[in-house]
Image (cartoon, rainbow, N blue to C red; front, side, top):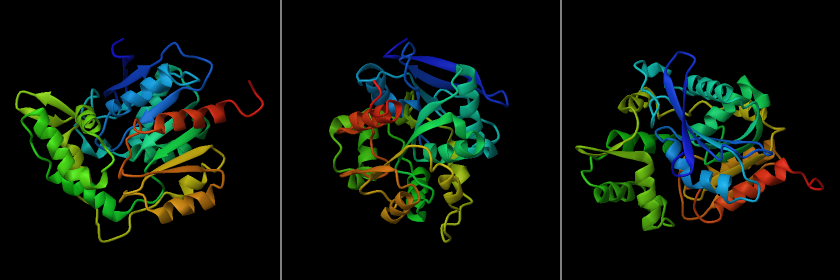
Length: 297
């Protein structure tokens, strides 16, 4: 145990060695929380939120934050064709099986939310509550094109300060609400220090998985999968400056899932930092309302 978590390694269905962080391992009595990061992100993205949910919130929870294959401390896959949400959803289920977790609340940022849609098709009983962070069943082409643009042109900073500056140059316009501490925390979450400088902590081949996308056409949607989540309590979080999740999609999500709760985070884009402002308290309160319905102590 270090910094409030322990490392957990397990085998994917195809034998690849994968990693997750476990916070609040002794916490029981409430559903655990499973945190699923974005395309090139990793378990460190959820560190502060996981600490809050496991050590500070009213209802303390076990939290599991996954590194998908090719990210963080999970092994890289020699076949980049396996870097897809179907395989990654299977990897998450394998991790939950290894941990003995049959039901949980899920928090998915960006790609993590897409994986939740797939889990709803593969094993709906595992989903007790859902938090979607700046993601829905329809992705805006502009947002995904923006992601590919900055991944294709990712700088190679030599120092930590250069790495922070690089992130601010790319994302600063969409995130005016972030502080210096927020930017520094972001870099430590998504990068690792090497002898040659600070590099993104993911398999560079991941960028190649975006190469075949035709940004001149609408992207496939997941409305049928979203509709299948209608009975599951859902909190949708959108960055006010998001290019990936449109207000129109959020409105349609609300129409199709009338019980959905939603928050718009001012001063942030794709995707809001879940440890900022009152988001940790809001997420914890949502989970507690679902886990302990009114009238039950």
